[in-house]
Image 1 (cartoon, helix red, strand yellow):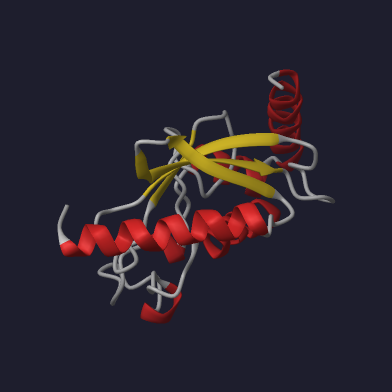
Image 2 (cartoon, helix red, strand yellow; image 1 turned 90 degrees about the horizontal axis):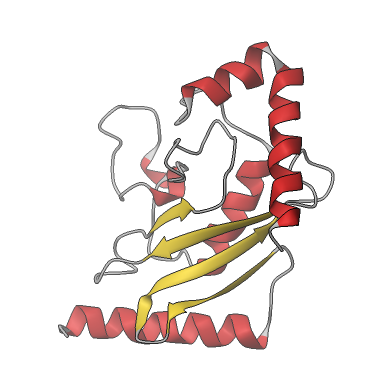
Length: 169
């Protein structure tokens, strides 16, 4: 293991221990497999007073060897219908984009990844994303279209997914 990967490993172990000691409302997190600290299983509870309220959504958070200098990827393994989640489950929010200037000019560098982010701040940003979708630069064009033009259909799809997530428990 390189020195960078070793530092990343220590930092992730510390964040895991901190979350175990001081759980945060709205999600739980742990390792997918005890043999690797670079892959986490996260369960996000749909935020109260949102369309996702009461749902349980699983995701895998995969950290690069040079974390925290580069962001992890987050991919929902549960079905989810949201403008900022690609059809394959990958989450698309600014803080998960590589640091620096946005080559497409949509985001300020200050909105993108910085090494101060933790597992907690990432998951809280995803919870916030569930509460208020950004349809300006959607990852899922169909979901964004539903959100903008056919809100009733959007709500119906999300309610079905929330019910399905509750039945999986």
